[in-house]
Length: 111
Image (cartoon, rainbow, N blue to C red; front, side, top):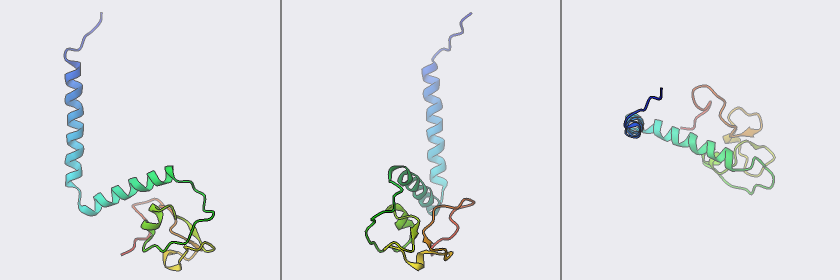
Protein backbone atom coordinates (compact mmCIF):
# COMPACT_ATOMS: atom_id res chain seq x y z
CA UNK A 1 0.00 0.00 0.00
CA UNK A 2 1.48 3.31 -1.09
CA UNK A 3 1.01 6.28 1.23
CA UNK A 4 0.82 9.65 -0.49
CA UNK A 5 1.66 12.82 1.33
CA UNK A 6 -0.76 15.55 0.35
CA UNK A 7 0.82 18.91 -0.30
CA UNK A 8 4.34 17.65 0.42
CA UNK A 9 5.86 20.56 -1.49
CA UNK A 10 3.96 23.02 0.66
CA UNK A 11 5.16 21.39 3.88
CA UNK A 12 8.74 21.36 2.63
CA UNK A 13 8.44 25.06 1.83
CA UNK A 14 7.04 25.75 5.31
CA UNK A 15 9.85 23.77 6.91
CA UNK A 16 12.53 25.62 4.93
CA UNK A 17 10.92 28.92 5.84
CA UNK A 18 10.99 28.04 9.52
CA UNK A 19 14.66 27.09 9.31
CA UNK A 20 15.62 30.30 7.51
CA UNK A 21 13.51 32.37 9.89
CA UNK A 22 15.14 30.70 12.87
CA UNK A 23 18.62 31.38 11.51
CA UNK A 24 17.80 35.02 10.81
CA UNK A 25 16.34 35.39 14.29
CA UNK A 26 19.43 33.79 15.80
CA UNK A 27 21.73 36.08 13.77
CA UNK A 28 19.83 39.17 14.93
CA UNK A 29 20.21 38.18 18.59
CA UNK A 30 24.00 38.04 18.35
CA UNK A 31 26.13 40.90 19.60
CA UNK A 32 28.25 42.82 17.09
CA UNK A 33 31.52 41.22 18.20
CA UNK A 34 29.99 37.74 17.87
CA UNK A 35 28.87 38.48 14.31
CA UNK A 36 32.33 39.82 13.44
CA UNK A 37 33.95 36.71 14.90
CA UNK A 38 31.70 34.40 12.87
CA UNK A 39 32.33 36.33 9.66
CA UNK A 40 36.09 36.34 10.32
CA UNK A 41 36.15 32.59 10.94
CA UNK A 42 34.18 31.95 7.75
CA UNK A 43 36.58 34.11 5.73
CA UNK A 44 39.53 32.37 7.38
CA UNK A 45 38.18 28.93 6.41
CA UNK A 46 37.59 30.10 2.84
CA UNK A 47 41.13 31.50 2.70
CA UNK A 48 42.53 28.17 3.92
CA UNK A 49 40.77 26.31 1.13
CA UNK A 50 41.37 28.75 -1.72
CA UNK A 51 44.93 29.91 -1.05
CA UNK A 52 47.99 27.77 -1.48
CA UNK A 53 49.93 26.99 1.70
CA UNK A 54 53.22 27.86 0.00
CA UNK A 55 55.29 30.44 1.88
CA UNK A 56 57.91 30.84 -0.84
CA UNK A 57 58.66 34.26 -2.30
CA UNK A 58 56.02 36.19 -0.39
CA UNK A 59 56.82 39.91 -0.72
CA UNK A 60 57.19 42.18 2.28
CA UNK A 61 53.97 43.55 3.73
CA UNK A 62 53.43 45.39 6.99
CA UNK A 63 50.38 44.14 8.88
CA UNK A 64 48.70 45.82 11.84
CA UNK A 65 47.39 42.55 13.25
CA UNK A 66 47.50 38.80 12.76
CA UNK A 67 43.88 38.80 11.59
CA UNK A 68 44.84 41.09 8.72
CA UNK A 69 47.88 38.93 7.91
CA UNK A 70 45.89 35.69 7.96
CA UNK A 71 43.22 37.08 5.64
CA UNK A 72 45.96 38.14 3.19
CA UNK A 73 47.40 34.61 3.26
CA UNK A 74 50.37 35.40 5.48
CA UNK A 75 49.54 33.07 8.38
CA UNK A 76 52.41 31.27 10.11
CA UNK A 77 55.18 33.68 9.10
CA UNK A 78 58.60 32.35 10.06
CA UNK A 79 61.37 34.55 11.44
CA UNK A 80 63.34 34.34 8.17
CA UNK A 81 60.49 35.84 6.10
CA UNK A 82 60.54 39.58 5.34
CA UNK A 83 57.02 40.26 6.73
CA UNK A 84 57.77 38.65 10.12
CA UNK A 85 57.62 40.99 13.11
CA UNK A 86 58.29 40.02 16.69
CA UNK A 87 55.19 41.97 17.80
CA UNK A 88 53.02 39.43 15.97
CA UNK A 89 54.82 36.44 17.52
CA UNK A 90 53.08 36.20 20.89
CA UNK A 91 54.71 33.04 22.20
CA UNK A 92 58.21 33.88 20.90
CA UNK A 93 58.70 30.61 19.02
CA UNK A 94 59.84 32.23 15.76
CA UNK A 95 56.49 31.79 14.01
CA UNK A 96 54.10 34.75 13.90
CA UNK A 97 50.32 34.52 13.40
CA UNK A 98 49.92 30.80 13.93
CA UNK A 99 46.49 29.40 13.01
CA UNK A 100 43.67 28.84 15.45
CA UNK A 101 44.70 26.55 18.32
CA UNK A 102 41.27 25.24 19.33
CA UNK A 103 39.31 25.84 22.48
CA UNK A 104 37.08 28.88 22.80
CA UNK A 105 38.47 31.23 20.19
CA UNK A 106 41.94 32.40 19.39
CA UNK A 107 44.58 31.90 22.05
CA UNK A 108 45.82 35.48 21.85
CA UNK A 109 43.79 38.46 20.82
CA UNK A 110 44.97 41.91 19.92
CA UNK A 111 43.30 44.77 21.77
